[in-house]
Length: 350
Image (cartoon, rainbow, N blue to C red; front, side, top):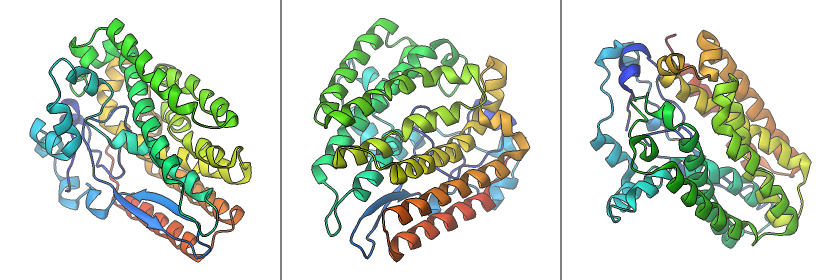
């Protein structure tokens, strides 16, 4: 499973090694994630996904190898890692495939990253002694697929000209000319309509809260042109489910729980997407877009340690305010150990 991911420019200029799974709106490769169900003794459930040790791609030998010795992922590698989702997209009618690829249905990791914060809050909101509401989990899973697809469509509509200049993204449907901007706009309308139907299944508080996230979804792709912190905006967008999941169950947000959970999720996104952004540094400089990778440079590891500290602190506050017991804190310690291991493995050449 251990892989070093490289694009054309990355193979010559960047030596970033993957540690955490990338977000769903940009990655062209997938990593497996293992589900970890944790049952606190107070019988409240916390659902989390932690990448397995095998996903840590910073092997010592590979980290020390010259960049030109690192083989870019082939299309065969990508098909194998995408698994069933890619197979389903590949078996679809040829006229439909560009739209499925536009919503990244063949690369489900982004859907998981959008869905997981929802599962955290839905699980924490469950009554003591009860499992999370399975129908609510299914509803949010459907919404995650649709909203991730809508976000990717918006991203590609904004980035058509940029994507054509980057080897990793030039094959995206809009950039490649398989889907026009007008066709993408119509497709986007369909996705948002279905997502609205899902949202309308929730209580009024959650409907308003969910609608409030649309501004982030639409503007996130522009942030890389305006600020060195687009990963922060991505975190604010991708972790909205940490607020929405709780309100869907409880009819309102308990901010003493939801806010630190949301902040923890944002920090998690900053960690994995900053690492991911190092892959595209050379191309980003050439085309004039910004990222936290370009901002942090050789200070990246220190920043990531800071984000990890805030994340773990937030999760601890969540546990205290929701009356969790020993198994929950054992899970937080496990997450902390995993992050520490990955920080030790991380090697980034500027």
